[in-house]
Image (cartoon, rainbow over all chains, first blue to last red; front, top):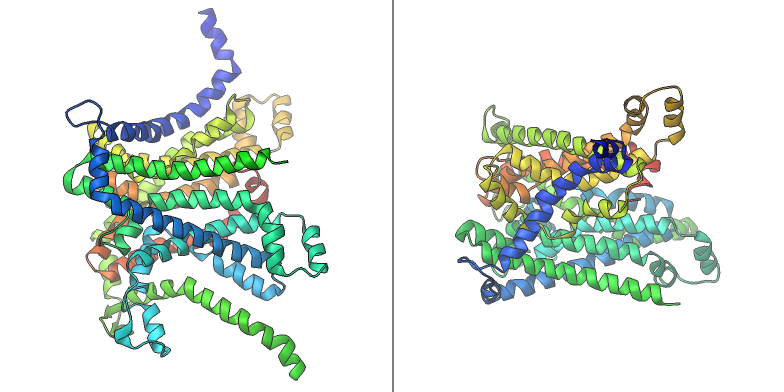
Length: 284
Length: 273
């Protein structure tokens, strides 16, 4: 009875009690299913451990694994490039009107849901979409020469369109909080703006860029709507294959093996980031 | 005149071309959506719809139609997601901001985990586990899935909002004899309310827009707006898909334009700290 009383008056117990519901929610509804997915990737249907799910996954979907890596990596590189270009212009642009216009423009896709972005692009990039119609209207192509972009290019375009504002917002914020005096003095010494961006600004905001790009990488690995709606044919992305294994065959083993492969891919990216951080920290 | 030409117009030419292309890249897809939302007849190779009208809008807003049903579903689920999220995020945020918690940063990172792993395989297994508890295909199941996804924003923003409240005001209330609970409800919570409201709006939008989790956990009984959009688009009914997209777009873009008013700089600076 005495000890129970002491527990009631222990500050830390109360503090933990306040956080507990939130932690239990994440534990039961995310960490437990995540572990469940990893375990069932290595489980045979009749019980016991096996690599059969992975062998089957590689047999059927090795093309799609490669396709996913290429699409997501290419999109990440393009997102990084455009985000740096936007952030750089917002920081170094000399015309206040052009800067204001760009600032107003670039954020629009930020909170647009992926499924809406997919539907936008499904109409915009189609053979009869607004993009082709404007190219034809300007006389650059004949109507019969146009082609649909609803394949791997469509996925990349949609990812870049949707994710660039998020990374650009982070990057522009980091650039804005830099000490201006170094930039001004380099400018006074006659350095070009591109050189200032690459040699002075980028090294300082690199951690922010990398964090933004890793978060984008994970998001793109998680999105189901964009690959399903933009590119229905093979090869396609792993998210679509997982949904297909479940909806068509109820095949949890292979779906979870594919899931595990996608965890590994993001794990590799996170590992590269951490290793770089360690190396940078160790440098004098 | 030629001086003005050279100093004002010429430098604007590359800028205007680049900004114009950029504006087209941003607004082109949105314009195409608007065309489809009001097109009644449109097929290849016509560049613009052949007939315009509101027929599909009437179809969407028909009482007791599929679209109204899914709109209702979406809003009910989003409201309950906000209630559940706030009920667990407010105490957690308060404890993380005000109490001395061991492993505080580890706890904060735990809420980020759902954003740190590719989630499709996780939802597949959530659906499988929910099936065992009779939660698959129910509102409760969908609300729970949406709650986990919004939790990092709810907890992090609530923590930042409570951290931004001046401790001296709380101490003054305690010195005047107010109990801890009373101080919380009359001083701390009202002062943190703008930040909490921002997190509520954020969670509401996340729930409204959520597709993947609902796709696996909600089937076949819970159809939300994103699922209606998906089904319409896959059936080739671009009008219904575009109208549904517009309905989802308006709150998202509105939030983007007004987020700075909800999230004050003093709170924003503390997010993730």
